[in-house]
Image (cartoon, rainbow, N blue to C red):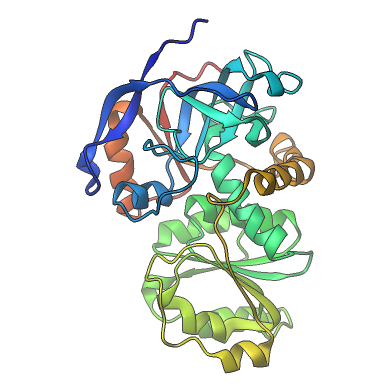
Length: 341
């Protein structure tokens, strides 16, 4: 098919409220020799998109003004260096710096992945940023192993649902926090061994009782996107030689009750991590390991893409509203081209 010069995209009138989002026209991005051009069928919604819309995300190298960290679709053009790996017509999912909220997006050839057998092209939009974020945190950073005890905060979020599944995939025991009884029940369905509704009050003692029931004095890994409000509780429940992995800070970026004495006493390794700003070389290595170790889990059914809701691109404002109201139980996806599987 001929690639047009112009495309529809989700654009911003200015930083701020979600009503600043609108569907407009812009140039189709220019492809480099080591990139592919993808006609987007669907893209995922992420918290980072909300931050970028509000002007809370610092400028990144190679980023466009168009939001979107992940997308799925069909390759319509291939750079010279990428022709040994990809061809026009390939159905793919891509991890990108930005630009996913559009009819076309360019992706580096090694940040492009074949869609697993049995996963629709729409479902595939929920894999790249979400599962790679969780895999990076639990495996590459957290060195998760069979028998570990893992606490995952916001277990019903997109990354949370991926993290629960991956932790179980690696043979860990999993506890998860969530903000409603419905979300708690969903975490159970995904395999979480212990679930806590944090709106019911302090949860530290209950979480520790579960650990002691497994002959554990604390958690091996805490996978944390909450930040400030859970700093004390996380220190209380972490065990000896544990890993505390912070991948967001939804309740606040700073906390006064971080105890170096506790960190030293328990030999806690505290990591801060983000995926978007990582180098292409890092992402290439991450994706290679993910494909070798994880991708078959989607094929044989051990891993599932949890899509909560989908909207057409014309309703992208509603998708942002849904995420900002903390209603999510899984991944939010916006479609541009109808799923033809």
